[in-house]
Length: 587
Image 1 (tube, helix red, strand yellow):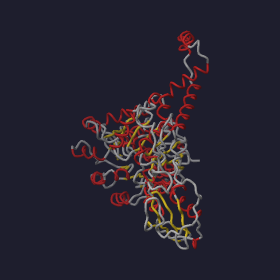
Image 2 (cartoon, helix red, strand yellow):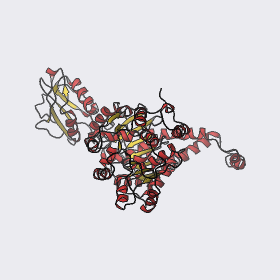
Image 3 (cartoon, rainbow, N blue to C red):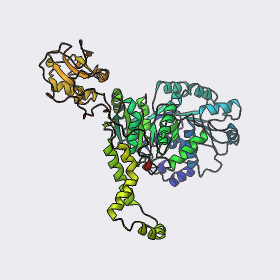
Image 4 (cartoon, rainbow, N blue to C red):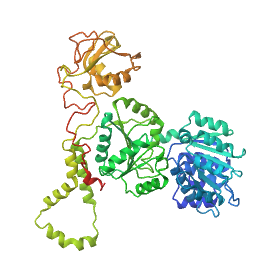
């Protein structure tokens, strides 16, 4: 098995790697480091976040750095301030035994004057965000004339953030005779365009797919109607009392609003997004890393610089538009050989997105029910009991207060004392969840069964029937397996020779039609349409022949106790009325 000690690196780097406890290189390091040490040519490295890319390029970069030259020889471009600081920290650790090595980091969000002093102190390595580097170039505060190596780290993310013109401007101002190493999670057309324009004949190294299928991540998704998304998030947080995680939102506004609402309810969380100044973002990260926060609510860009191995949960408040981004998010947990959970809150229409991501990560996602109130209370009860059982009070505490405690509780037996302790911890949670509503997503049904005049159903036509080997049960199975809709959402199935009909709640019709269209049944392409003469209550329109079988006979088809796809109307005890605040600060 390859080890770092087998690499032909300078002794100072081997000593630093040993000090850090590194032994076996990661796949991207095994592929890239030997090549860059012996033949530092242009390369492209494709690997996901958390695979050890910084060491993959950082160790060879420092190996080739001439410490006797007091000018910028190596430039690392990265998309965010956080990642800049992280790279500088890691490179500094690798170069700990290299006397005379200077590494400067320049990024926006802080006064430029201090960074001008740093780059004028003749560092050999500069780590920069594109915007701040251009600012320094325009001020003539930095020279790239002696540059030998350029590293584009997280190239796809820089391009996604709109830095294409900045990158091109910077590369135009670098010497023609230089070596370029480009690292990216994906090889998009834009990334390949940058490579073709500014790189020579390059060699590609890819371990992207190996990292995607991290078997230590449990991928779960919870189906909630959009208006219940925030309540579902709260429910999931309360169901994971020991959570230490990241909640991802699409926008900076969402990150701010969600975190503010959670903080008002007593959760120890904080936002992290690009509209916050650098001082505030650094303070949030300090609190998060010291576990003063149970979670941060972050955008994808802001989370780029987070490098924490102990994250237990990643929660997608909303799925990202790009399935590739999901792999970046989920990769924040289950690091360093640990296990983790990635939860996604999705609407019924987004289940197809889950299927796309499943294909990308090559893992099956688990559809999980949003826990009800009783489950939340039970989970927190066992959590607190475990905390009490594991507690080890200091000896001086027991000695100092023993007499007072004995006197106070002299009339209480053990059982009463335990009940009171647990009740104090759980009373707010119990109040919040004793009458909580069912948040499992679906479609509200009025009036109970489909025959009621108040119910609204749509009758759908599908172009497969008995000659395709269908009966009512097989059609029901095909529909439910193709759409993830619960069986009791489908009613009044009619199967004919070449076509069939069935009823669905009107609110579900578009979703089901979207999921089934273009599917194939026994090599026949499926087509769905709304049947003619549909009327409230699921009348006989669309050419239905009366007397065809119903899959479950005369069952009460849409009774109130069915959770299927939707939330029942209820008192909503788990709403934002301050429930559960008492215990949250002690997660």
